[in-house]
Image (cartoon, rainbow, N blue to C red; front, side, top):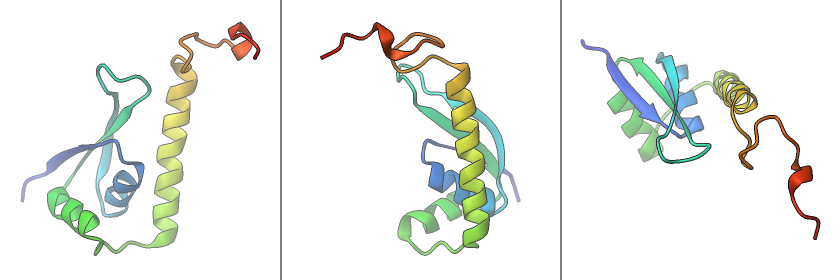
Length: 100
């Protein structure tokens, strides 16, 4: 049986795959799209698990899923703190915007 790689921007699908044995390899920034990150996962039968997820027949322990979602959110927030804000100013507040 050969290990597969899977990349997704869906935090819940990625968390589901982590719960089912996938390993998180990397978090990548999507090219030409600001603030969009994708999770790169590796494991066995990921295409089958993805199919189960999309069909709505996937089963997982809800506590494990919650922990996986929180872990991925922590990674996303850490990445956002290290990168630029959505206003394009690193570490700056919104004081540069005009008041309405």
